[in-house]
Length: 169
Image (cartoon, rainbow, N blue to C red; front, side, top):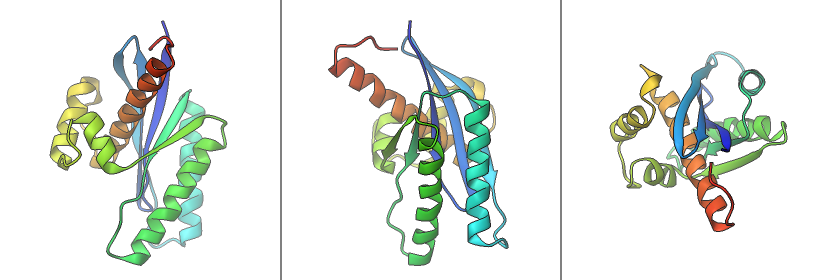
């Protein structure tokens, strides 16, 4: 029996959501989730360091085998898109620094993997995450998004294993 733990990350400069899910014999198990919050009054560089430190704590506290980060969507405001891209870069670096594989998924791919349609609403995503992981209790949208990223990555790992005729966890 193979067990795989996946860290999903929903990057944001103000709030970065994270969630850890365990895949065991085709079943999902909620391990933990949370938010890394920064203060808008702080300099961008300080906020990026806080995101890195928060993810370092998560990666230290939860033994994960792989991680995944949501890709940036096109934003109407170029300054906001740039800041989100910086936060996303820190998230990728923080996870990759530990030596684990880090996947990247577009929002539509995550929605399709979790709900079955790439145009799912936030409410549909939250409902499906709570259905798949009933032990989570009350969580924020950012935490639900991070757990959805982890679930999506786990499904892609399973597909990779099947394609290579290896044992699925």
